[in-house]
Length: 299
Ligand code: SF4
Image (cartoon, rainbow, N blue to C red; front, side, top):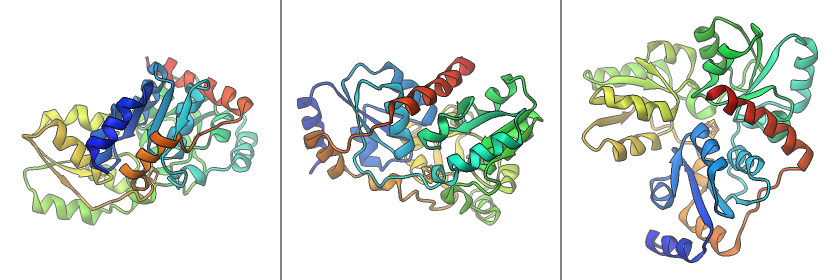
């Protein structure tokens, strides 16, 4: 099926909006109504008037859209598009840490299950994690599940940020090593290096800029050539926005779960309204409170 056919099908299906994450395949980015990072997509989800949201991303993103739009139909084109990092934090472990550090405030990365979000004080994304933590009263923060993002916010805020679990990570970003960064610097001596805060601490420290994908888009205007250390589709996204600048992936890092969403599956979602995302009401209500707290602290 061609992209034009999917677009036509979408036009026929009134009241449908397609949201896509920056790491989606280029052809999915082309059929999306809105493309963004987790924060931008969460905010967009609060403004949608359409009755149906087709979410081209991974499980926790579609769940977040459902939590924010309990009365709308939220569809994910492939149920198996799951973020492995989100499954690294369990309710049991979180409950254990909350008991152990009862004085701490609990900040969870949006890459978590709805059940864990329901136990958090506030949710964050990589774009706003440090500013949210700065605004909290407590100097002790439980932060999960990404230990590398925890390192980044600890450095920026000076607070005691305790990662749960200690080893939480994104397999895609930790596959990018310092050797990849050095190789890219040698190959592209005029380029600056931008890295996502899910990258390893030693990679973050050697980069010129550490930024979420949304921030990468905003800051890329400051220089003409960049090495980009994150999922490979980000280069496509940046090139689309800045056709006269040069972007090189520091490594061919691929999120296989993001790539499970294909044009064919989006077509099936549009035609048959599959696969519907549901979150139990009590969990959704508590998780929504923590997400709304993020919006409150982001403004
Ligand atoms: S890039 Fe990493 S954090 Fe993002 S969805 Fe894929 S596995 Fe999860």
